[in-house]
Image (cartoon, rainbow over all chains, first blue to last red; front, side, top):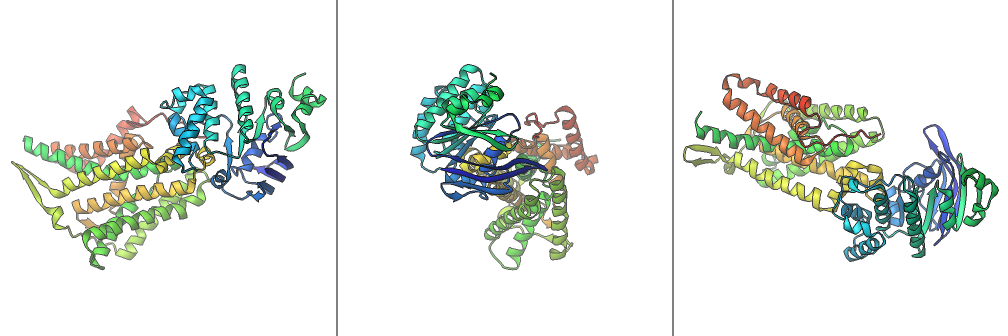
Length: 234
Length: 297
């Protein structure tokens, strides 16, 4: 579904992503793990054109999207839940969800989807008229995920969805990701919480200072000696 | 001071205030989205009555049609100025865009001097706007009512667009977080263009009403109203649309009442406005309806 070919990204003068290539297969959960500053977020940001790609290609459903504008990429069916949730604090929960559906025009479909996601995240329904800024961290994360889903994406990218959440909420969000995947939406996940992420991943890659050093199925990496030592704290 | 005179001046204050409000919206909307003080806004305001003057004089079109043409042309000028002078500097330090705005201001003013000459032109006032209404002892010119009425209609339309439409939602989202708005599929460049179109169109309505009230137009006529409207936006809380409306009203009313109560020093009316600005900056730097500004990193 998504194919990254020899991607190079520079941040200021720094060579942040050094020629990485990987695939995100349709209907599966693919995870990028790695330490702080390894380039995980930059990779996601390059895919949706929030940062410029120096060389290399991003192919989405065999279409080259490397030089498209972000909003056009979203229209093709790619959604991203950004790091730090980035809920609009000045807008209500309802308005945040409406923005998620910004690229769509089918009023009925939007209303139906909203009902669906409110069932997935019951706490959002109670807070539809509350400002985004007044939600708790966990609620904001739920809103960010629901907002990402409102565009009916084929590919959903999540950047550190468990960051700053209590362990119980981490489990909840991981469960939600699994459920979204079962609905047939392809997932590209970036996580520092390697253990939780690898457990649900079909495929995983380890990123170190801008290069891919390891790949395998989630389970393979969970049992990999180096991964255990570096990311699982064993 | 008689009660009738006071009433007359209150209507007058409302009318002037509504003009300031119309101009102030443009400053506040652009600031809200780009964190840019658009110093060329006063010049955009000045262009509208000129466009009206030429389309009604040279092309001999009816007044209302000329007014619509003038508003459209002014809105286009505002949009083009953003495309040419600010958009290329979107990722540059904020001060660059600010200097560019000052450049646009000088450019438009001097262009107007070259094209329209610096000699003031007298504006023809349609009969509808020069009627006098008599209420007992109070006499009020229809221009004053027209300013208030038209402003209320235009501002209601603006509130509808900003708070009830998808475009408005996108604009409010961008003002908080441009990057995440992009991730929602919002075409940020388009939304910014729309912002300039709306802001400039409101300034055009303000400019036309201004030229009916003070029927002489000249290339530097935008400077002082532009500056005062900017102050109104700051007083109300820059970035806030209700704030700009409130600030404009407050400023127009205080200016008129200042002249009413202290006719001997009425020549200081402009400085009085600046005193209000200084007081507000001392007492509530974020403006009356402003929220605490969080500097974006």
